Image (tube, rainbow, N blue to C red; front, top):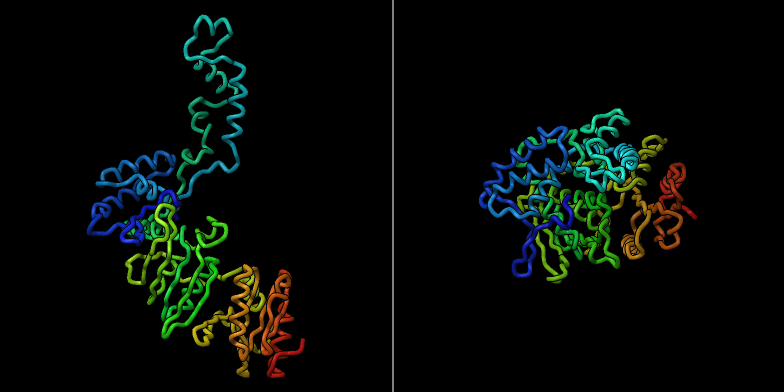
Length: 412
């Protein structure tokens, strides 16, 4: 993704619009894209500085190409690259040796003058020759390794190109759109039949959300980084990471309020017909390590006729919607919802309490970390099972079996 410094946008009648390359207005970039990729495809062993210089030379051929756009393309190409980074700190060690040896020949000058000669000065060429001899390297080898730890001197090892060069332009458009969300006060998505997919990508991005049903569609609201008491880059990045997943879904539209110092609140709108291409593939990743561990532990356990499904059912009451993490189904037909509650903000716990209160008739087992268990009050058909760091599968099975036998919430 791009940094905030590389974001380009314009303001039109109170709305913010990210920089976007189109076939009609920016057709020259279609011809440039293969050349940009070729720089990295053939650049093995070339420094990052040199690669960026080549990209800059190419993009300067495009009319009115702003410096930020050049920087953005360099950043996106770097993200698909693997560089030699001197992880072992060899360059720093070499510098220490060279500087220590050079001190023996101080003062070092390009030309000896009577003054420097009287002080015991040494020609730079002589000092380099002696230092190289001491290190059993040529001076050219020393120069090539002396500052390899600086990012601009990293050497390209490998590059994952695009099957179609237009993919680079599509990535640029998405990246500029993502950068808008760094300053979002909030994002609201209106979805029809893609609710589960949207929620999955939101959870993977670790976004806090609230859901309401409005007629035949769902309203999902996400708090933005600019709405938090302390604006954090981390949460802004999380919201930006959500966008490619949203673009992979269908039948939705969204709007956000963006906070800009010089402009105040600006409206941003987007929908599933925006023609932005997502490179996000369908994923089976879990929303949290707790859920992943629980799912794997379940697969290794004796389940006594119970089967586990992830987010298989949407519960809604009036305008409110709740999607439990799991649903367990017994061969006898018994169904129970499982909801894992780990770390949440106090406000989100209040919202979670309101959600479960709306469904007192649903059989819900809340798997709650001990530190926050006292903050939730279950309904009579709900059951709270506390855990510290790992959910004990034997205890979960005990609760489920008790529910099946009694047809109601077990005691205690």
